[in-house]
Amino acid sequence: MTKEELLRILDFVDTTRSLTEKRANFSMVDPRWNLISFAVRRHYESKLNTTTSMALAADVPYGSALRRINELIEENLLLKRARSKTGKSFSIHPSKKLINEFEAFAFQLKSHVGNTFGFNNEETGSGDFYFGGSYMASRILSFPSVMKDGIGYDQVLRILTPSDPTFITLSGFSRNLNEFSGGRLEIINLPLDELHEEITRNAAKPASDYDIIALDLPWIGELVEKNMIRPLKDIIERERYRFSDFHNTAWKGSGYDGEPYALPIQPTAELLFYRKDLFDLAEMSPPQTMDDVLLSAKRLHHSQPDLAGIVMNYGPGSPIAHTFMQTMADFGQPVINLPEMGCDFGVDNLHGEHFRPLIDSAAGYQAAHFMIELSRYAHPDSIGCNWDQRMKLFANGKAAMTYGWSIRSSIFELNVSCPAHGKVEYVPHPHGPGVKTVSPVGGFSLAIPANLSESRVPTAWKMMEYLTRPELMKWYVQNGNLSSPRFSTSADPEVRAMSNIIERVDAMEKKGQLQLWPRPPIPEFSDMVAILGEEIHALIQGDLSVASALKKAQKRVDRLMRERGRY
Image (cartoon, rainbow, N blue to C red; front, side, top):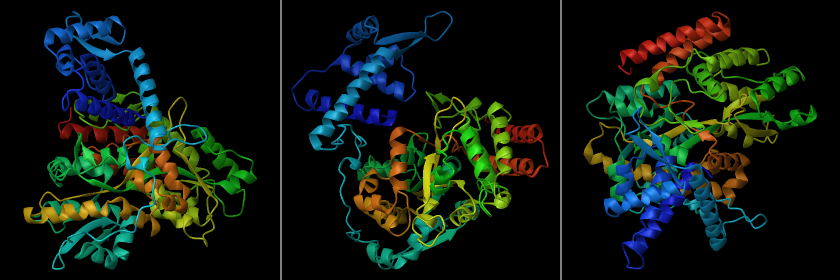
C-alpha cells in the first residue's frame, strides 16, 4: 500500500474511534492510540513531532500524556532524536517496530473490509481495491444525466483549454454538453505554449475573458504565486465536495502547498510504449532498465525497412526540456534540490535551497549521455519532434518504441487501420541503476481565473464540478479519451474494455509509481523549461559538449532563482 492509502486507513480508524468516544458514550478517550496515530500520520506526511505536539494530540492532561509518551518510548514504539548538539532539544518519531506493526494492522484491516464488502480477489483473497475511493464499489456508470437546474440558456460559459484529447472531445460534442448543462459552452482549444501565453495575458486583464481555464499540472505553482487562479478551499468546504475518488497524485497535483486550486479532468502518465510483436519476433523481454532501452533500440534499429529503434521528443523548447527532466528522474534525481521524502521527493512547502538547480550533477551527466547515446538509434525526425509528431511516427510503424503520455495512446488503440493497432504494450519509465521505477504525472485540471467576477464564480464551479463527474469521465473515454483521474471510472467494466492502458495507469497509481516531482510545479517552471529547451537542444544537435551545456543551463537557472530571491 502507498502512504496515501495508509493515511486513508488512519482517517477511517480515527473517525470510527471518534464516533465511539465523543459522539456516543461507548468508550473513553484512548491516549495511547491517539499518540500512535499522530506519530504515524506525521511520519507519512514527513512532518516533525515534538513533545508538545505529541502531548496535545493525546487529548488528555499534559502530565498523563507525558507518561504515555514515555511508556511508548520504553516499549520501543517511539524514539527520540536529538535536534541540537546539547541534546536538550529533540524530536519524536515512530520506530521501525511501530511502522511495521501499523502497516501489518492496516493490511489486515483493509483485507477485513474487503472480505466484508466483497472487494477482495476471490482467487488470492488480496485487496485489489483502493481504500476509501468509489473504486471500492465497482459498477457500470450510467450515461451522463443533465444538470438538475442547468446553468441557464441565456448563459454563455467560456472555457480555455489545450488541444488535447479530452478537450477535443468537449469541443466536438459541444452540442451534447449544451444539452447536458442547459446553457451554451464556448470551448477554445490552443496548443500548449499558446495556452500558457493566453492564460498569462488573460490574468493581466481587469476581468477574465474565460469562466474556466485548463492548466498543465507543472504550471500550478506559477499560476498560484502570481494570483492567476482562485483557491477552491472555501467552495469545497461549503459544498462538502467529496474528492476521495480522485487519484491521489492527480488531486495533489491540482493543488499547491496542500491547498486545492483545481479539479482533475485529464491526468496522464508518461510510459514507455513498445511494439510487442517486434519484441516477440526478436525474442526480447520488455525493457525494465535504462540499459534495456538502449539495448532494445540498438537491436531493433533498422531490423526492418524504415524502422527506427525509438522515436524521441527532442524538438527545441518545451519538448526536449521535458525529456531531459524526466530522464534525470529516471536516474533518481529531480532537476532542482527538492526535499527527500523516503524514496521520493516532496513538492510542497519549498523554500531556500530547495530551489537550487541540480542540472550540472552526476544525474544530469547520466541523463545527457543517455539521450545522446539513444539518439543514435532514434528516428531522424526526433530532433524536431513534439508530443504529437512523436506519437504519429510511432503509430504509423516508424519506430519500435517511444516514451509517450498515456492519453495519446488513442491514436493507435482506437484506430483499427493504424499499423500499430493491437500491437502495443506499456511499461512504466525504465529506471537507472539502484533507482525505483517512477513515471511522471502530467495532464490538465480545471481552475477558475482569479479575475473572474464574483457573480460568475458559482456557475463556473457548478460547470467544473459537472465536467469532472465519474459518468462524464466515462463519456470522455467512450469518445476517444483514454484517461481517468477517478477510481470509480477506472473500475467501470465498460471503461476497462476500451483499453488496458487505463487499468495499467490505475495500478501504477495504487503502487505509488506515479509522481509529480520529475517536473516540479514551481513558479519558475516555465522559465526553467525555456532555458533547458535551448541548452539541451544545442547539446543534442552537437553544438555544445555535455559539460558546456549542463554548466550553461545550471548557471542560467541559478541566476534565475537568485533574481527571484529564492536563496
